[in-house]
Length: 323
Image (cartoon, rainbow, N blue to C red; front, top):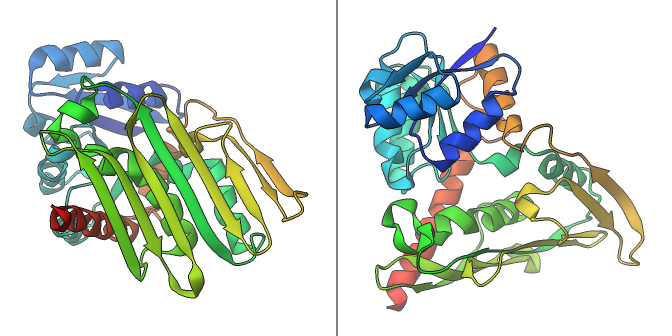
């Protein structure tokens, strides 16, 4: 039952993902593909891959690969996921999945037509803490959730990849996706009103931003993020019966959480340290889906990817209209 993985791309996230695969039972780093032979061999040697390919086309043509992990820059995702699907390969693509809903809808339809598995690697959604918070919501322990506040700032200068690299999708697709994830999880993907603003650099890359979303019954989300002088990642969720704040850990990779009532008495608490580094949960979900013959994950279905992309497109439209 070993799942043979092909790794498309050799950058930082590919290395992190391979660190995970080495320790997940029944996962094998079978092949590595890069645009250059040198990079493919370097990554392949580091992780003991059986095969190394100097082109992505060669990688996806290998009949022994069960699934390809796409680890290239966001701007390349549409092209590379499509190459995989056309070659008949199941795909796990690093977030942000693609840049537009049109691209996503095309790839989803292509995967479905070929009965291929397709998923975005939004790792937080598979974490035990995230799953516990969802459970608390479904059990009504928050009461009626009214407000989500979240921020994610990374420490950086003009040399930071998000400041200078136009292929990465800016801070919206790389950082704000996590505050948006929790807002959408707790309040929904269809707010009645969105107010978005962004500060951009000279290369038109969003580097600091704010998103306010209003829902029915007075519910709202207040989200901020970008490049700052220090790293910050805070999450607060407020309901009529309970509330929680994650501030001692970065919320997108938290391993513990406590739910309080409005008298600051503990309603529930949960702690679950990562088995490896936090990426193992999405890996296990993918492998379980493949074994069950599923073409989508029920934890992170592609309709949620579409919902997130639509919100991001709304934000970008508002940025452009404010110029």
